[in-house]
Length: 279
Image (tube, rainbow, N blue to C red; front, side, top):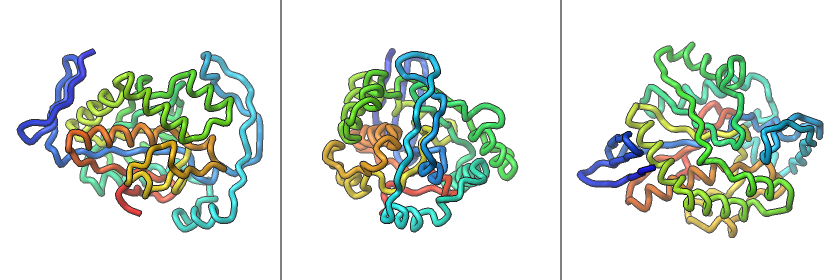
């Protein structure tokens, strides 16, 4: 596959095989999205059916009960005052999408699934499809597309190692980022960003985990502290998501081209978004 992304004549030029697009330097925007509401985390331990990442088969597994300490609860309340409320998830996410579309004066979003086995949130009646119905009730002309790209997913071996051992999240993040570069996934994702924006749609890289306030310290991200040296919320290690690492690596890729990018997290609990460049 031929992948190229270059800057000249005041524009970004992206090519992937026969696909080509250009974009003005100041127009780069991208987002991450954790679909679930934050209040879904402290639930009781229970059996659920999940997909085994090593094989396309279902099996019963135990879902961990997270103990949310008082400091975390206070922080979450400051960020999302009603975070314990898990009702109205489709409406809240839809309102967050509407806020992003209005704030950035665009008419569309490209929702890019980064899960290893994919999610079914796009199906009729599911979370994302319901959120899009909410968007169209307010902005009937909004264009929202779904994409799935396995290249952006953690490898099966890395995911299995992370799930079955006590690997720190920082180590997982470092190995995942290294894999993204070794497979040319970062450059591929950068062209996805340009292609989406050229169509007037903001690219949104999503997974099913929730947005966790300050899971990775924002000031350390801004200072580009290596993943393995950052302070992660280890009490919620399993709830951390690779989507943040993917988006950060895309952002760093544009930085290497001396291109500024507006990066933000879409937060259903707040029905809005938060820029990565704000504390």
